[in-house]
Length: 351
Image (cartoon, rainbow, N blue to C red):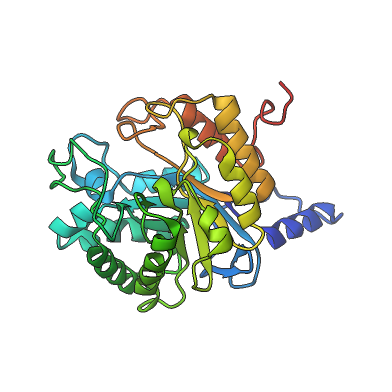
């Protein structure tokens, strides 16, 4: 395939064609920017599949909040050319879009002005779009981390507002708006924190229902607790809704124990690495963290979105607003997305 959306039967067909002796005399056309047609995705046992039941593994990157990327002077403008670049040059299959509660609450036309264009461009360039409700903290108590920059423009004081009623309302509005866009997926609460799994699980079910009431067929992701780093609770007490994809954010500070949990959980449910990265405030070894993580996902057949395709938000993939120069992290992500080259030789233990 031309990008990081993998359908296994298509690969089998390609092998069959290569084995055929009666090959065309003219060279084949270049690969398309993405899948030839969108299909709604669903969960089947522990896999994400398309309408035909073929396995789908989505890999790509996260971009900045669309209001920031479309209007804020400190960031490169996020436009259609960026999604085209991600589809054609980077060969991404999915783009994660963080939607901050603070910005949604203070901009009544947030979806129409800032998200609608991304949804349309993603459809044009055959990219799945993961709309992530970018709240942090405890929806029951309102506890959330301090953000000293939270009153700087364009923020209004509580960028990650964990308010439950706000989340329910915005998720329902978003799902109703995009229910006829099969390439739009949903992550219901980015990083639950200051909360136990036993308290979070029933809240997650309410958030899932907020999406599926207006959009019954939606593919929905549910994060683990402790800043989406722990999914242990889901092993014994899974979310009591059908077709859930579990999400984890295994940054370097998490250590290695997450792999044991994900390996076990992925035997019964799909698991997606919604954020990962290194550099800046997440120092780590490219070999021991980055390449090892990519190799693990390749071995397990796990999808991911690397955070973040930007020069200012961190850990960044670029060194400047022009996006002309990659950081070591950005170079690794681009290399990992390249067709047929998911790993370096070092990650395979050859160097």
